[in-house]
Length: 385
Image (cartoon, rainbow, N blue to C red; front, side, top):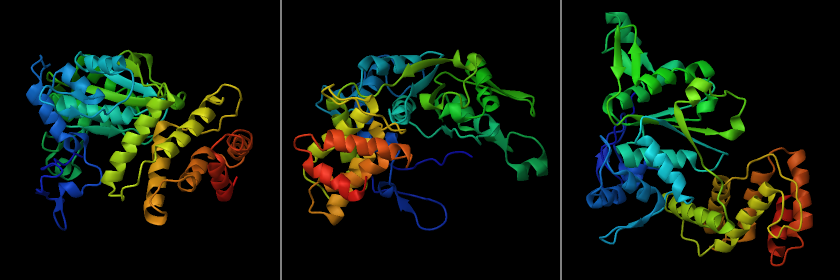
């Protein structure tokens, strides 16, 4: 089905018709699309951007990279970072979209693949909503097109009866389409992209017609390498993509910075009461996750077992956001170990049998002996080991 068009931007006070019921102000949306949430930054970049832009791009490649990585414009406008990581990764991703090659963002769960995909589409096309969500049940129609069966039965095959997919709409409008979790889509449905990406054409044999992509069209897909063996991409399809691997944050400091930024943004969007600086607890969560992920303590002296989960940066953000809500609503307003302990336990212990043993061993051999961590140790013991 076509994606509804958003009429106004957050903070504008303009109402948008949501169908049956009362109109809803856009600033009441729980999670605005990137092009709306950061509309001011995108507008400032467009005004300051005097570099060449590919056909139908809202910004130049330089401005798109600046939007993702952050910076300060000549007029003093501060562009907040959307992605904290190697600059070259973002530059390669952006320049890929400026060519006729599609972009595949690959990485472990929680490495911001979807986040980067959304912001790239928002900066390039001004619309991040042309999205196909990949699942084991994604049909071919989600990638190609479907039919309005009432019109089809009444009048037969026609363009009026055809329901374009997000990919078809992107082709005809010269925009960026997104496919999430590509390797979760059945292989035969994946391969419907081959002609689209190689010939830039989508045949409609029922009408004896085809839709040809106009300049500006491209596609961003995401996949996580934990799904290897689920629905592997065919070699023919893989050749149509330029693959960019998004790594986990290289240093603890970088990961702490990412978590702190996203928790602050989420806290504002959820209208959580402000909580004093919780960077100490954020650093504690990041340390626990990195040590269990890497299988060794930060000082390199103690080997630890890794649990079955990924313990990604995204999960750290979730744990801290949950702790923030606990501190604000049921605590004294200060983020403390007791607010994050249950969230850490839930993130680590995914397999009740194996992971509980891993967590208990880590708690007793590492956390218990670490200076300044007694309060966290007690809080974890209280929620159960």
